Image (cartoon, rainbow, N blue to C red; front, side, top):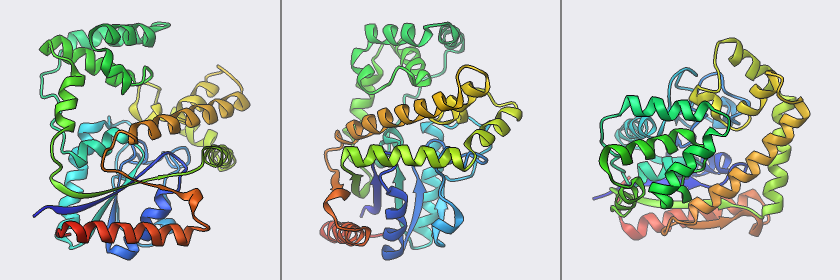
Length: 319
């Protein structure tokens, strides 16, 4: 019998974390973060990391666990999340995967077997050298478009790591990484998953994003990034590639003013939210919940909890 897994996904600033806490309290849950930056220690403000107070005693995994120097990618997340799942199941709780990094969520839900190929370090170094040149991201993206145009629909050109991995995979195997991922995505999930996508009216969401960014700046985002920079971290570190960190880092390097950096963060975050929504629209079993259709948070929470209970009962699975 498949074990239960609740997913609460959605774009940034949609209120996923607060909703996941309420669901966890109602359904004896513990939470796994599906966020690519909140896993890092010292990256608190820019990642909008949930605080101990906000957790309300609910145990969280994959938050505040790694040093900022460590590389964190989808395979590392998958391994850590699987360990967390085992602990949660053993303790008799229900796991709730909460986050906005669609590729990470998909990797766990569908138990994706990532392209198990040896790395071609020489070729990777060549590609990384191209990436460092002016206009290098565009060059790499065009290279990928030529050999695997479909993969460019799901890989953004700024995600240089994934672009390089896709090119490396093609060189090593002669196969398209998009075909590999398609096969993996069609696999049946080993879990009884209830997949909630929380969204909102676009204008409301964008306003919330702008306010969140302003609050990050007020709370000391520039100071946080400066401390990370003083530790020796650069934009080559995975941790510093998150929205908010790279823009402030470039500001500290004199590329533009703080006001310009803040506007860039807002713009990049809005674009990211749009891409997140596009990604989750491909999840055929997702249950979409538009928070603008509810009068308040309690009504929204009650609705989501009822949906989850019904779906779990319908499938008659264990937690």
